[in-house]
Each structure stands twice: as structure tokens, then as C-alpha cells.
Length: 367
Image (cartoon, rainbow, N blue to C red):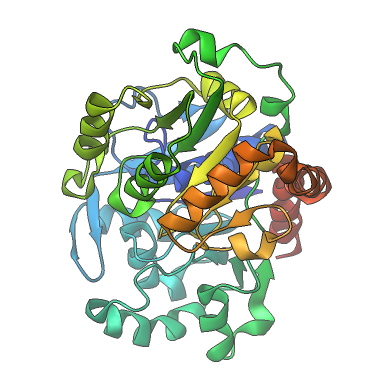
């Protein structure tokens, strides 16, 4: 099949959407399909081909509400003229998807959208966007959601689109976590008994402040909180990086790391005692599935689809509850064992990327 995936940002940009589309694209290419990713121009991208995936870059930015600038016409002509068998728009509220809406009736291939949560569903500025959205969604052949219980699925169902819906979750790479730990603690100078971890780029919505405050409130002796994530190069006004860096300067038990190579991030998961997640905007957080894969107990806010996995993660409502659960873990580390076992069993059963890519390949083939 000739497959097109569209996503606002892609390699070498790092983030959840980028990783999902990378995993899907590279694994489908390895299975013999011709896969192209349409995405934003990135100044550090040195090639239009990566691991068997062709990258078509456009100097476009924005979305339908904020306004779209750049090579819009070149992008829509690319969509209508390229003759792909299947087109997947990954994430709504992005220029790659919003411009596709304008030409849906002119696309010859089968059309799939993965909305990824509708984070702006209750934003007053997006009211007209969501009034218009059902008309666009009806032109797609399938709608792929990561959860049967999240707001994007509920939105589609309310507008009579349940028959087009399909649930395919996110996941983690089994081969990554099959490797032995590399010695993250030694490499990055973690000498304390306990290492607590959070991994996400430095946006305020990712909840680093919640995690840092909960860690301080728990006041665990001989513990280090490690924050791994990159500082945003775009939309820097949303960045909590200065706050996190200041916290690490005031308190040596908080360690902020950027530009950590992927194998060492995996090792951090494997060597951490607890993963702490305070995010307020997610759909199906990849770090949750990576905790499942690495046998790492997770304390998380009830964001995105985490409540689908209540037997696998410890869900808290606020900073105080997170601090209390951190203290409880230190008092009885074995208390998380049953959740961790359930999480790893769930990962092996249905949340490796190979299994997820098989579901997408089956979907595309059926269309």
C-alpha cells in the first residue's frame, strides 16, 4: 500500500505525536509498504528519508482557529495529486489535519483520522471549529480513538459516527525494554537510595510543578527526582523549563536533564523506583505504556485514558494525594507489586508497538 501519515511535527522533533507516527510509519515501511509522512519543516532535519520513511516537509504553521500561514496551497495540492491508497490525519486542531478538511471530497484514497483527544473541546475560541467538525468527520472512512471512554470518542458518538469508530491504543517498544539497564544512575550521578522519575517536555500542562511540589511535600530522605524532557523550541512561552531549572538550582535532589539519548531514557525507566506524572493534557500517554513495559510503578493524575488502566496505575487527584502515595510507597515498596505485574501482563497482551501496527495494517488493508 501507498500510505500517507500527516502530523504537525516529526523527527527530529520529539514528542508524543511524533513518536506514535514514527513507530507506525517505520514499522509499516519495514513490512513493505510505501510510507510518507507530511509534516512541518524542521531546520535540523538533514534528509527527506529516515528508516525507510519518506518525509515531505512544508513551511506551514498554525491551525484553523489561530490562522494558518505558509505553503497551504502546496500542501493541499500534494494531498490531492499524490494518489495515496490510505491517508491518516494524526491529531485534530493542527494545520496538517485542518487543511485536509478543505479537500476531503477530492481525495481518492481512503481517509482515516485519529483525533487524539480534542484538547480544545471546551475552549470558547474553538466553538465554531467543533460545530463544523462533525461534517468533516463524516467524510472519513474510519475514526481511530485510543480509548472507548474519552471525550473524542464521546463527541463522535453524539454526532452519529459510532459505526465508523475503532479503538487502537498507544503502546511501547518491547525491544527497547528487553535490553538490560545501562547504568543510568551511575552515568548521571544519582547516588541516593530512591530515584523518582518523570519524562515529558517542558510545557506547563505537563505538570512538572505538581510533581516537584509533591516530591518536596513527601520529603523523602535519600531520594532524587529526575526530570527528563526537552525545552520547547516553539511556543516557548508555554515552557516551564525556567521554573524547573530554578527548582534544581535551589534543591540538589531535583535533577533536570535535557537531550538524553533514547537508550538512556529507557534505562531511566528501568532503574526508577517510581514514575510520577502530573500532566493535565493527554490522550493516551506513551510514558504510561513505557512504565508497563519496564515494570515501573506509576503515580499519575487522571488524565487522558489512564482511568482505563486503574488496576495498573495509582491515580491521584492532586499534589497532596501524590505526596501521600510517594510516602506510602517508601513505607511499603511491595504495595505496588500487584499493579506492576498487572501492567506488564497488559503490555505483553496488547500494548507493544508490533501489535498496534498490526491493527493499523489490518485496518488499512480492510479499507
